[in-house]
Length: 249
Image (cartoon, rainbow, N blue to C red; front, side, top):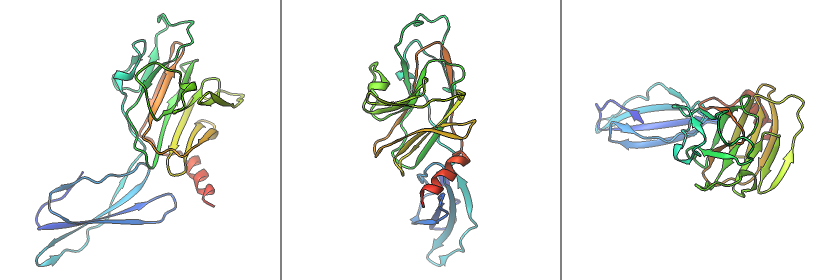
């Protein structure tokens, strides 16, 4: 919400968005009578806000620009979707299965979903996976409260710890000489891409291409004792910005 001191009858608000291509897009809202206004912003963008006050005598000069940068995507753990065997940290960033758990030897994946991400713009998060030898991570677009296999689901796209990238029982495999300990996941509705990155090596591991049109849930599954650590609210990595700029030409 934007808060404005109320000395004039109405206010006019102008918003400029500066995307990766550095083309400014102007949006204006006139006749604001309340002291606050809710403006929806997309992640990973720079916005410039300008305010001009007005009454029957005329309008004031436009204010100086206020820069607001939406740094990364933030989301919260949906605890009611977590399997009872999973242990979740209070801040919802650490997901683990204890070594003393009775699931050792089973192949079932125990899933947890995060809150819905809007079906627009770009969403990026990272996972530290070094603490778990059996996991799947990705996104699902129609989550079920019942247990199911992410790898066989037609509404889920995921990366398996064996570096298989799976959707609807179809997979592509990537061979790596050095397993990454941190994976970046980027869902770009604008280009129809769900990409997985080796963050330390600044490499693209695999990209799913699809016309993603529905809101999504980041999805995590553990198959063995260990833990996954979630990182949100971070900016797009420079290597992705460079990659996307090159694909525009």
